[in-house]
Length: 135
Image (cartoon, rainbow, N blue to C red):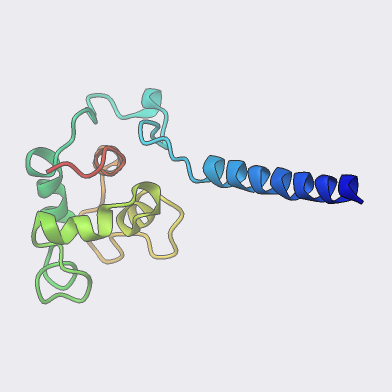
């Protein structure tokens, strides 16, 4: 009887350890790895050390925060400042901006007649998000 109880407790402990290991492994995200291999970046596209102020602000203001879209009072989320943008950019690959620009989104952006994203702009946005959205 005691052996049977011991075996049951060990089985439960084993399942608990297995569950925790699976949970830990599945929650890992490699923030350094970009979806696109570095050797396929457009020539001259530097995605190192992207910051909002230095690199991303210009892209957001020409592609997103435009009249009728993500400007203040526009149809979409307000991207008129860094603090408003990061609300949608935090979270790495699960962030809504990453999903809409880089990921397999059902509503890819821009979804209206804009000049369009350059491939380099997409890589810069991706690198910035995966680096933790530095200002």
